[in-house]
Structure formats: structure tokens, C-alpha cells
Length: 388
Image (cartoon, rainbow, N blue to C red; front, side, top):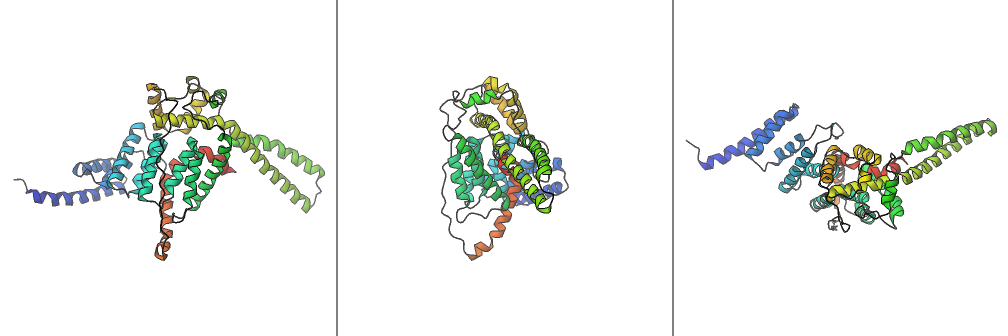
């Protein structure tokens, strides 16, 4: 005889928490296979169980190292399923930070959905208006796509009154991004490269480098610094007086020359690699639009093969291959969809809220750990500044 309907609901309520406890035991024991089965079982009982959905998201992706990066890159199917689960989780529980961050990583780094990621971070800001992470991530993406003015506007908002205090790592990153904006805005302010325009002069620059590899700042530095230091050592040995003051002067001269050579090597490498950065932008435009814009002779080039295999993960490459196979040409009038940049009036913190500022900094540090394997993409543009 079946139990009455009123008795079924308590049984279900008691069953799911018990199943979650069992799921946690599997996770603590490192048994991913059993944990995946148990999470699936829980979702069959309760399709809106956020805890099980998030565990299903994480277990559906490859194992992570201690620093939060994946041991192997997720495939296109794994990344797409994780992105779908992340959207479902934040719809059920908009305060689930981990789902927000994991979804952003999958959509941006592994799927190349730049337009969706911009809106994703903007939706996150509605829930957490004082959090600096979405603003910084939006700015990083906009820099890559050539929207320097919009990126600068967002970086200005990071230091507005009422925003979370940023940890040191984020402060350094914001400074590098500001340097990147200044450097590349000067290079593009006359005519920003838009890959959807097949007649843009930048395509000739990319074509001219298609059979070359990207330049290395370290290689350029050593090629310039090596002969200079040897020449200085010989000259100083002949002309510098052999005293304590002479040795100090020699050290300062060599140190100053090394700093000068490093600055020169960064400038040379930036100019050489400018077509590489433009090719990165074209690849991301193809990924976010779902249409092709890169000429066939460039796609078949050595430069393209090096860039796509070195700088983009497996899922991104698999998705881009499908876009190329579809071979739908992008319109010259195509423009990336930009979310409305909302301004929030953040009230001044009282004494009790200021006392909780340290806890918000801890939250930011946790966010940095979760999101660090998405930061890598804007480092393509800022790595020279970081070394500087």
C-alpha cells in the first residue's frame, strides 16, 4: 500500500540531506566516480538542489591542481555542459559566487563567448555591486577586443568609494592593465583594428608575419644585453680606476645599461608582436560571433598554427574548428554587443561595516584563486609590463 501524499514530502526532505552527506563522504575520500553517480541521483530526486548541481559541474570537468588550474584542459562537450550548469545554478541561487566564477572561466577562456561573458559579469555586479572582480574581468576582456576607453572607464570604477578593498595581487594587475591601455591606445588611436573589416590595413601586417613565430622579449633582451655587458666589462677593466668607488661606479653603470636595454627590448618586441595581438583579437571575434573573418592564407600559416595551439585551450580550438567548417562569413557591419554599464550608488560604510573589511578582502583572495586560470588571456597583452 502506498504511503499518503503528505508522508511522501517529509521522506523526500529527509532523503536529500542524507544523500548529500553521503556525497560529501565520497568527495572527502577522493572517489569522483561514486560522487558523480550520487550527485546525479540527488538531482533526479531534486532537480533544483544547488549543492548537487555545483558538484556535478565540478566533477564533470577534469581534476584541478592545488593552484586551481586543470590538469588537462576540458573538452568542448565538458566546457559547454559546465557553462549550462553554471547558468542554471546562478538562476536558482544568484548568490552562489563559485558558480559565477566557474561559469565565467568556462565561457571566456574555454568557449570564447566574449559577449556572453560581458553580460555575465554585469549580471554579477547587480548582485554584488561592491565586488571589484567583475569590473576587472570586464576591463581585461575589453582590452583584448580593442575597447580601451570602455576598459579605462571600468578600471576607474574599481577605486570608487564603497568598493571592496583589493588585495595586492589585484592592485598589481590593475596597474599592468592601465599600462597596457596607455601603450596600445597610442598605437591604435588613429585606426583601431576591427577584424570584421577585410580591407583593414592590419591584415597586411599579419600577412607579412604569417611565416614567422611571435618574438620573445627575453630572447631580444639577451641578444642586446649580452654584447653590451661584455663590451662594458672590457672597457671598464681598461679605463675604470681600481678602487672601491670605481667598482661602485662600474656596478651602477652596468645596472643602468641593463635597465635601458630591457626597456628597448620591450619596445622592439611589442612592435614585432603587434600583428600577433591583432591575430588574437581576430580569433576571439570569430569565437564570439560564430562567423569567420580570418583569410585562408593566414589560417594556413605558421603564425596561426603557433598562436592557436599555444595560447588557446582544447575546447576553444574545437569550437573554432566547427565555426571554420561552417564557413559563414562575418558581416563588415558586425559589432560586439556591449551590456549597459550600470552605475551603482554605494552608501558610505559605517564603523561596523568597516570592521568587516578584512573579511571582504579574504573573499577577494578566494575569488583570485578560483578565477586565476581565466586571467592568463589578458596577460597576453600585459606580460611585458609585468616583467618591466
